[in-house]
Image (cartoon, rainbow, N blue to C red; front, top):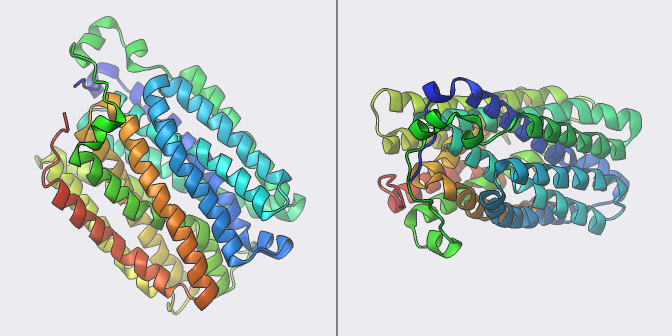
Length: 416
């Protein structure tokens, strides 16, 4: 098993890498969030039903699952620099393709292509963190780059309504799609692997000579550590997709929020999510610094986050818009704190050469869960028009997940 360099060996350059990962996540979620913001507009202009919209989101989730699985494996093969660049170019072109779609089928195809490309983002990012950061800093680094998802989800509601009102919804997809090409240019200029960036002396100190670990998928599937990550992602990733794709609609249906006044509530929700992402990653790292085991630190942070989601049950019947926004924001913050630690479990239990594949397999499971919840939410809304049952599912899922993770891996031992 090889080890990433520690902070003294690489100076601060690892934080430059983390900043690039942060901006990649930002672009990723700007592109992903556009359709959720435009849902009322697109439903009105293109005459979609709730089930039509659910099917479009399910197409994204299905392709995202495949992208996680196969693109995640490709990241281990191609390396982060080349693989990440190709993934961002592909998803940026797919985002722009939404502008020429005319039907549910057309949007489903464009959305599936977007999901396939975006499936490479988190395997590449987590793999890069495993390469560049020591164990005690990984959750914090993951929390920081993962906070970019919230910035993206925050930027989108501030910009997409303005673009749509002044130029039409097609330009919203075109303009957001261009952002990825700027990121690719920066990534190709600045990113190098630790082996290329460190001197030979520092590289020998950072990576003691050890056999290269090359584990096929079948070998990974034999380890219970993989199944702990898979089950955690399958159960909880869909809840984040629920927030992304349905919260604008929830606020519209229950509080009358429209494109004209959506920005501020969404900003509040995703600022809270940013705080949760960095805070959740910081918390487990701080506990490790205090002498806690990695096992106790990660699981304690995740349990706190799981409990923090429970109040979302009250959001449907809250007395005011801002009470609803606060409850959803708290749940989003706790999800992102959970997610920062959930991603880090892969690098806690697997060597860095296998991290891309582990994140890919578990991310595929999360996307399958997201595909299922898209259909479930569409059917619940079509039949009841209420978000109560949907938020009940969201409230309880994390406690179930942490219980199963602890059952499968009572201690976070290395798989090999």
